[in-house]
Length: 418
Ligand code: PGA
Ligand code: ZN
View 1 (cartoon, rainbow, N blue to C red):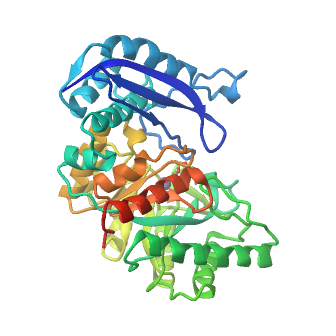
View 2: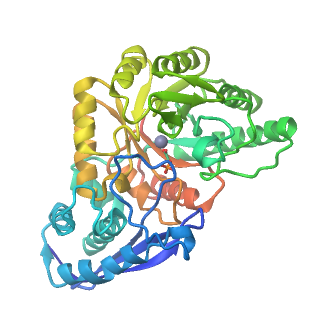
View 3: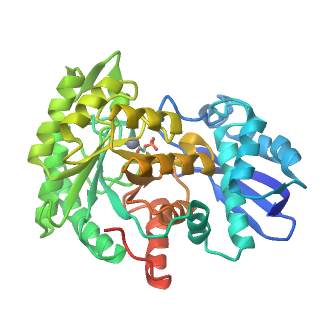
């Protein structure tokens, strides 16, 4: 049981220099917590609504002052002095207070900030590390998820040189996070040399810290990743595998995919992905098709789900109803979990449980607009994600999460997901 003394918020900037918010929750017993809310660029159509001011005179309309005012005003007024049994109790109260199915009135950013800050305050009240508190809430044994680390970017994260939005590397058999990051850094350096030699491009990075030269095609991006793995002295597939986030909703209109300068239908995209799967060490394809193309996803899964992760981001939006539909249709086999897509920890936990009950893999993910806050690492550990996807190893808003996992590995003796 926790009694809230006050809630407050501040508008801060994220890793793209755009506004977001930081919320602070004070409990009556003196414990407190704070948390910052991330923001996407390739936002799914079915995400909970991130409230932006729309005032073109400030931050190009992206200000978060109204969401901040909602926490300082209406949310604080409704919650201060009130007692909550649990995270679920608080989150349900917030959902009802908002009253809209997509949290459009108070804003999913205001609601998630409150949900997370309360979670940290409760962990502090219990004197528990955040990951342990989250694990207890979920009834799970904490473990370190395996990083999927961004190497190259295109699409909405890098000015659209190629259609595929992000390419990640996974070090499948390294025993520790420390070793994963060593291998990753070797591959990143080798990739940097290739990019410099071939495209005369220095290490200027995209939104999630990946390299973004003007690859001729998405296929060349995959090819360069394999070259980087080999140049660093590793065996593609055995030592280092690949994953892609196609983010196909970004380049699909009315069922037509504008892919690397050509038009394709869903069957053509599925062929393209299947041919990559034959020729590259790909273990996961995220958003290979559009967020509304349920039938296309069914065919893609029928074709490839035995071989690899068919990972739903925009398709699922961490939304329990959409996940249930995907399970029933066999449209995917893995969940990308982003709590700000749904807006409260409790609903995200429902999403996680549905995915787990269906035998799915779970990738806990950051957004392209992140902050230095590291709560996502604790969430991925406490909720025992198979993988964590937080971007590259060159920017502090990403490293905050990797470095937190290094600390948990070495100080708390947690082990890495197999
Ligand atoms: P976003 O991208 O945060 O810009 O939506 C991340 C992703 O698509 O996985
Ligand atoms: Zn994605």
